[in-house]
Image 1 (cartoon, helix red, strand yellow):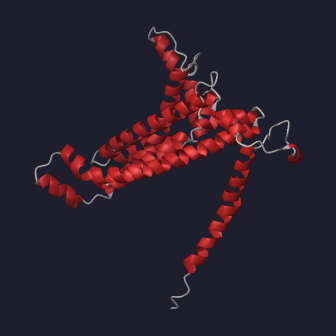
Image 2 (cartoon, rainbow, N blue to C red):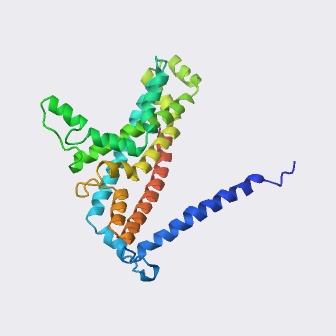
Image 3 (cartoon, helix red, strand yellow):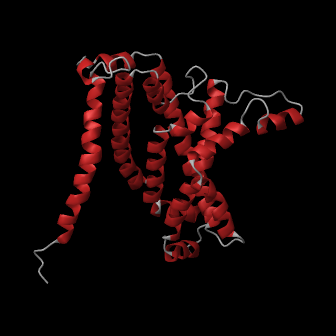
Length: 291
């Protein structure tokens, strides 16, 4: 066997080239439009001119950006915290010898299989002010209906609830895989030493599955920051942009014909994602060492 012929080196080049041609280069060129006056009235290349940081500064001072920024972090933090904790709890319960655990695993994972569009339509019907499932129950109990999607904070809560419901099963499966990889020898040794169920979980299981937990947190955080389709289906960013995220803000700017402003929001958002990912990567290493 000729050890000098290392095939993996050559096999890496093809996907790298495809990734660069179809993603890196188009994305980089696309970001350049954030520094131009590209809009629906200047759609021809000859009409587009360089305007520097005008669009970025305009969006940074736009009153809708702080709202979108705040909502984006609320969606991300609420989703990350709830999905991680509930996923760990369900994984712990379903990792035990209980009846119908396979059926329960399938039921809890089912929402993760559904399309985000389907989930959005379901919860839009559930939280509808008139004729919605929740308000129909409230009326039957003698309470006044609530505008679940008609105000900022209640609307944000409703969207977070739908997103958490959709992603808990995914986090449960990842956490369950981590728990099942823990050797029973460690658990039996801790039990022989007199440790209770909670002490075994806290001091043995949890530290060993921390890489899995970190994967859950990172995925939930990034996809929480990138939330768009569920918000767009349920509220469209309304009313009055109060439930908007960066994703819906980009879409609404593009739909209004302010193409360069939309790209500027995307550029700001990309920088934000990179910063959050780098910070979390550094903090997660310290967290693993502490636990």
